[in-house]
Amino acid sequence: MERNSKGIAITVGIVAAIGISLLAMIALLNRRDQIVGLNQEIQYDDFAFSALAVREARTLGSDQYQANAQGVYWIVTLRIANHAKRVDYRFKRSSPVLIDYTGRELRPSPSGQQALESVNGVRCSEPIPAGASCTTEVVFDVPINSRVSGLRISEDGLAGDILEVIFFGKKRIELGMLE
Image (cartoon, rainbow, N blue to C red; front, side, top):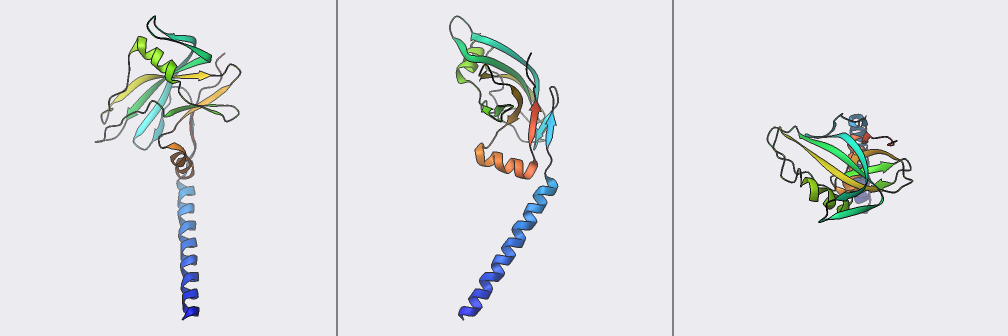
């Protein structure tokens, strides 16, 4: 009896290893890196993002609410397109992430964003209907001596980012260094 249960355990282990290997092969065959430049879409399922412009500022806002950058504000104009047939898409302001040449990730600046929105209003806060698009600006506080290389979209946190890269490939919008 004990010998039979060891045989079953070994068989289950072999079948599991084969299943994981097949899943990994399928992931690698479907994986495709996508690196684009300004004004080019990067696709995530039915939703696409494109960086239309990048500009710098030291301060943002109005007399009522003004924010000063610790480094320099990078304001990225993003276009979000919903290519789905039936599903709305809600853009998360925290999704865009700047990446510098050392691999460091820079998240949006809440104070910079609030200052910008005090002047320009809030854009893309409502769900984007299927087939529609929306354009907004996202503010990042970039350290003075940081050299930004690109932008990526992070929808599902660290675990989602890892799975995204494994199954779908690295997706980046190259921004280059502003002169």
